[in-house]
Image (cartoon, rainbow, N blue to C red; front, side):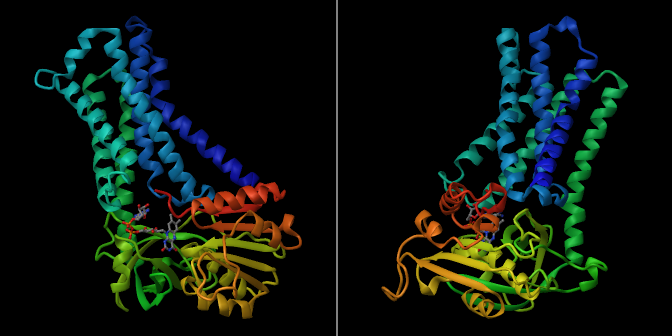
Length: 443
Ligand SMILES: Cc1cc2nc3c(=O)[nH]c(=O)nc-3n(C[C@H](O)[C@H](O)[C@H](O)COP(=O)(O)OP(=O)(O)OC[C@H]3O[C@@H](n4cnc5c(N)ncnc54)[C@H](O)[C@@H]3O)c2cc1C
């Protein structure tokens, strides 16, 4: 926990330092004659621009950042920073208009200079970016369309803003200021090349092939994959921690913009043969049941901070619902392969007996582990045979195992279930750092 906190604080510091570089540059050589208001407005513009650039870095799925923090925390930070960055971008021109009405003329793109045209383009693209992100679900925009538009608009915002800065040419006179901007631009272009060209090329070398595909419960398909070229991961081979996830795509090219995140549902002790259980929705996941044995998949991962701890004997309580069982099954498979003596408890909420995903796997695990499974069905097929109802606070309080305060808890399911379970465990005095959560709906 302390390590996690330190790395969060460390990365936050790096973020603040990086986004403030242009401010420091301006402050060192401040043009006092321009007055506070104008300088403040320019500072807001620079701050917004560097925050926008940093948004690309945050969303670039870098293992270095996502491993210690967790991908959902990284994406939550990306979302949270979008608001102040947009606010500063809007305040920058608004302040100018308030200072002097002459700046309003720059809004007329038919007569305004090129630098102002770029500013207007950047702000309009930003407004579209924010609106589409906030109202994506309400406007029923498909995730794929939204994702593409998000990339195009974000790139437009950033490039137009950079063109505006270069054409305005404030605080860019000194050679070292120009150099700093050139270095930042190069870093940005380098990141783009890494994410969009080099990483996909590497993924092509490290492509996977489907060896088994079987239907599972509740419209889920189970895929087993093996590496086409096992040597491509070097001596150590592909490795992951039980509970982590990967972004995958089945398109014919690793350069696809559209990768979807899925938990690895197999043992971390057999990383050469991985398994996913994928529930059908409307987009990519609906294509999965139509895949064939032998089809190629590109896997970007592993990612995530939701993984099994190294505790040798502390009891393990896994709480899940529906397809949220996948990372939990990976943890159990891993412990079974390690012949772990840990007491394991799996509490699963499902609609009925037929909707338990990975059911056969769970049954086999009960023979290989000290594992106690409790199912809760909201609408059981066989009435009275199983407890009807919900996996709620009462259920948790009644079934806590002995040694509950030392146990590790892993929660994966709908947000409401995880919030309830976490609150309940905290009320029962389980230390917060013993509780781990994975959210499937990060975007
Ligand atoms: C860490 C993590 C692990 C997951 N593990 C599993 C798993 O093991 N099994 C499983 O069935 N599901 C899992 N999911 C959920 C899964 O990623 C989505 O259900 C899936 O991407 C939906 O794809 P779609 O294009 O068919 O859905 P659509 O019908 O197009 O979209 C449904 C919703 O899925 C989400 N989604 C769609 N595409 C993406 C994307 N590229 N990136 C992020 N979110 C997206 C969006 O919130 C969207 O509104 C996991 C999600 C996360 C974040």
